[in-house]
Image (cartoon, rainbow, N blue to C red; front, side, top):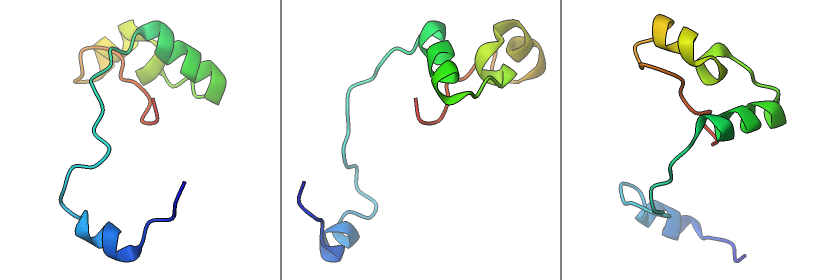
Length: 65
């Protein structure tokens, strides 16, 4: 991987970079990621509680997922 110059980075401000296709993330994938990172917060791993106690209607994926 080649280093990126500061000029190239500055020219990228406000532009889309590294766009990838949408990906469906299942609860199973979220649970596996929670196991791998030891992050079992209810908002990720407990669909019933997340639906009841958050405005999102269910669990949300971890930021890095």
